[in-house]
Amino acid sequence: MTAAAPAAPAAPPTPLPRNGLLVVQPQRRRHCAGCRRGPLPMVVVEDDGPRCLDCADLGHLVFLARGDTALTRRSREESGLSAVVVRFNRRRGRYERQGVLVEEAGLARAEARCLADAEARRRRRVRDARRRAEQDVRFTAAFAAEILRLLPGCPEDRARAIAAHASLRGSGRVGRSAAGRALSERAVVSAVVASVRHLETPYDRLLMGGVPRREARRRIAAEVERILREWGWEAGLGPAGG
Image 1: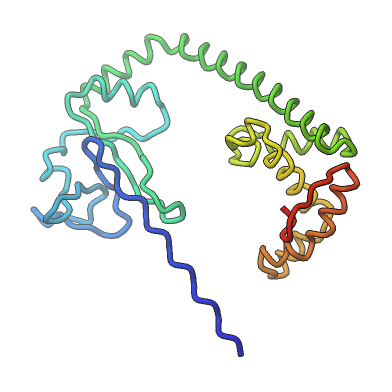
Image 2: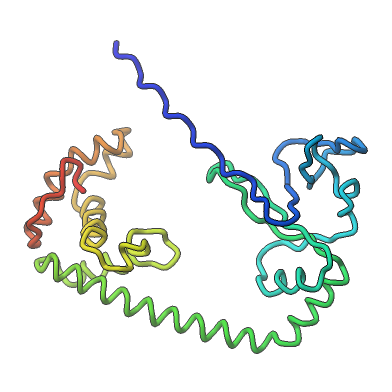
């Protein structure tokens, strides 16, 4: 019987950022090292243990959840004392902002400022969204044109669909990477390979059947390469199908 391969060591978590005052929303039950109260919804991490907000002299601050960038920025501007609230995301292995603690009077002044120019900011958001949409349309068209240049046999509607999928803003796909935005050959072909892999081969069924990803790619590599050659691609993709 073949011994199982040892598991890869877990990546170390992203260290807690140290810019300014920080407050942590703990994932486990924590009690204050000073007054012993708890469990605490928020703690300040100090050398001798966690402290509640009162013991850390932050108890008079109010919590403003993330979501409104302008209100958050202005609340911190209007507060003589503020702190960033973070929580550890186990899946991503990093601390993420949850909001800020600010002075109540500072929050009130910030809300008044936001109400005063709410319409102007709304119009600016509409203009920015329109500009981004126009940029996305131009970029998707350029990505599709590059697909057709590299693989002239690829159907035009398929090239447009691949480009739209790969270049979706905020998706994290290859089209939004630095190489994708530069329309590098590798990024463009990678987007085509991914599409062919899922739509023209049994790759998804292999994964659902429990076949490891690398092995599944190896099994369908020849079929992926055959289709790309039909579309005019001459370079090889390697043993794993790109």
